[in-house]
Length: 147
Image (cartoon, rainbow, N blue to C red; front, side, top):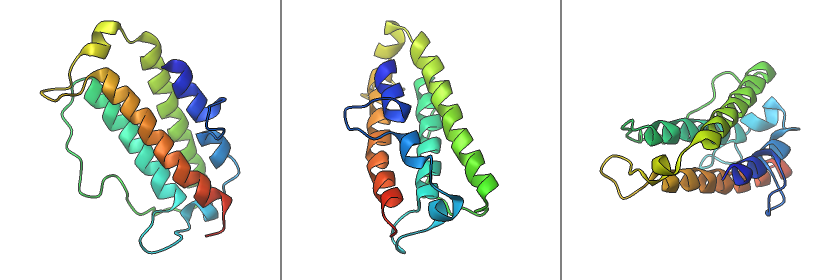
């Protein structure tokens, strides 16, 4: 799990793109651009990914969490380069928090169910990796093209 999590973020994944590799040359201006009124910007998507990473880890630790109606897709108010770099740093921090957790998680913890759901901690971990991969596809397209 640790290797898969690392590879997707900044390693050598099978899908040949990484989150950091995709975002490393994206400017704040490009990150804030919305390709259409019905889609999210790179920045909004990164904030969404950050929020879900935090929420899922909280859930693994037993915290109840209801998904807000905005699903963590919120407008970016400060679109400065400094704010974008802070967002990227926050994303990297979530990566380190997750890696610290994954490197110490026990088999017992992996098999624990989340509250009264059908999901185990193991399911939630793989779910967040799938979530990251899904949004990585969007981020890659948005970063690659001038939409």
